[in-house]
Length: 214
Image (cartoon, one colour):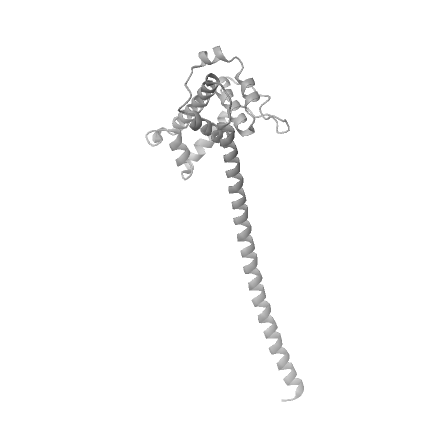
C-alpha cells in the first residue's frame, strides 16, 4: 500500500469522524432548540398566570374598597343579580336537554371548561348580550363579595332612589374592569344588550347604543 492510498484512507476516516461529530452536534442543537421552546412556553404560561393572578387580586381589592352606601350597593347588586340570572336563563333556553344538569350559573361556568357544547352556547350568549368573560369575572366577584350584605330591589324601586346609575358607577368605581362590567350589566338589563364603543375611546363605555329588548 503506497503513501497516497494510506493518506486517502486516513482522510476518509477523518471525514467520517467529522461527519459523526456534526451529526452529534446537530442532534444536540435540536435538543437545545426543543428545550428552549419548552422553557419559553413555560415562561409565557407562568407570566400569563402571574398577570391573571395580579389582575384578579386587583379586582378583589377594588371590589372590597367600594364606598357605596347600603342603598347604592343594593341597587348595583340588583343589576348584577338580574344579569347573572338572565345569562343562566338564556343558556338553558339553548340547552333544554341540560336543564337539570345546569341548575345554576356556577354549574354552567364550571362545566363549560370541559364541555365544548356548553362552552359554545355560553360564548354565544355572551356575544348576544354584548358581554365578555372579563365582565363575568367582575360581576361574579362583586356578587360573591356583597351577596350576603345587599338587598334586591326591583326596577321601579331602583329608579326611585337613583336616577342615573351610570353616572354613579363612572364616578365611584375606578377599577376599569369592574367599572366596565357594572356598566354593561346596567345596559343589558335596561336596554337588552351592551354595545362596545370604539377601541380608541378613553372609556370603552361612554357611548352605548340603546337596543330594544328581544
